[in-house]
Length: 122
Image (tube, rainbow, N blue to C red):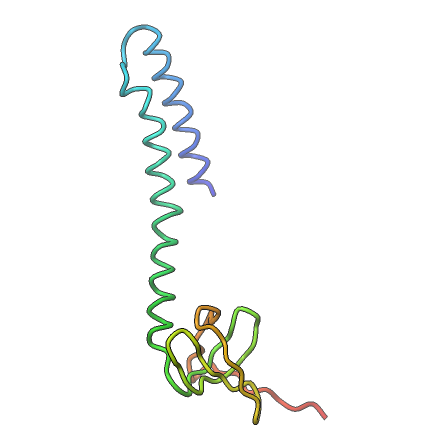
């Protein structure tokens, strides 16, 4: 958050200096575009690029999905993959209960050592 504030303050100060120079006849057309370029670079580095990276990692996870993987869906359902057919995955959520879900709704593949086994409360 501090980095964001620092960048925005520097853009504001830079733009005020550029416009002051422009009024005095100095910077020209490029000086007026400088704040916009800095803002674009900032948005690319801190917002667009990390989001693209995260989307690629999610896509790799979905492509590597296989039978008996433990998953968590976007709705919070814990399930085990039974089969994968194209864009659809059939998952088992309880004994003799299987549902078909769209693969893109899978948010997490749980590692075998961290899988949580539900306990029956008596």
